[in-house]
Image (cartoon, rainbow, N blue to C red; front, side, top):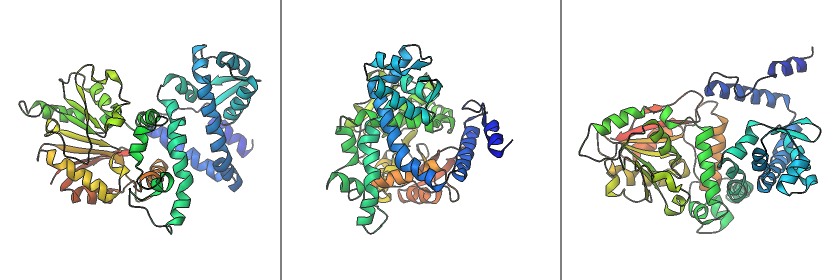
Length: 402
């Protein structure tokens, strides 16, 4: 048996369900990726970067728009021919065949007979998860793709300086002087919903849920001991569609009315599901986090910020923290910052990729533990503890007033 045969045999039957937990799956995935890089030639890698990524994203988006994945699911989700997919969607069968061949070549669907395909978990997710397809829409075409395309040109223009000014960075280089990324996201109809969907998917698939990292029962208990004070347990500052509060409510379903407050800009809150406030525990509150907290949100046990501060350079992030600090009650309120930490050695690739994304869009960055401690201290707070699970992209930094 050749070494190739041995390797292939050892991988047979391995899939997403082969591991004891998510940490083990991530370890295995990263090891397989490292091995792939050792096996690939320089040309293999360049081919992936410059041809495969663009061609496959274009194919996926076309198939999504044609309704292939949803119609496939509605037809029962079993093995299907391109002829049948064309009948179901009204698309040209030759076009469907070419697109399906392309994504099958990347093992996104499985060819089981000539011109016949089975779904993979990825293909099922495109049909079953309403937010999953959004990442291939406006989020990619209206934001990430142009940001990465213009970044090298912008950095060369600036003499290869590390960008630190959110008002004069790659985004303005692309959209023009005075442009603002968050305003663009909120007012671009091709992007707003897809951006929120992408953030929800990032939280759902890429991250360990915050309620599995931080002992949320301690927050609920502390709030209940303080009858007569603020009824608010958690204020989710810049919380998007409320996916993190929904996780908290699922863990603690018996919370009273108004216990959880979802805050974001009015344009972003347009994407919040209408039934989010149905049971009364979650209240939606438009708020600009550069301004002081409303009286109704003062004195909460937890102020939660998930992937908020990594959107801003240090000086701007400091302004956000200083605007929040007066609402916190010393000795009681906690600030939980759910963010990536850049390890000092061999940081996770998902963190370093996010770091370049922050640079491209906002002149911002992912931060090391030392950088987080310095930023938090500069806003009059101190770090109580860093909750950092093994192999997790993000940690929770727990802070209080100094």
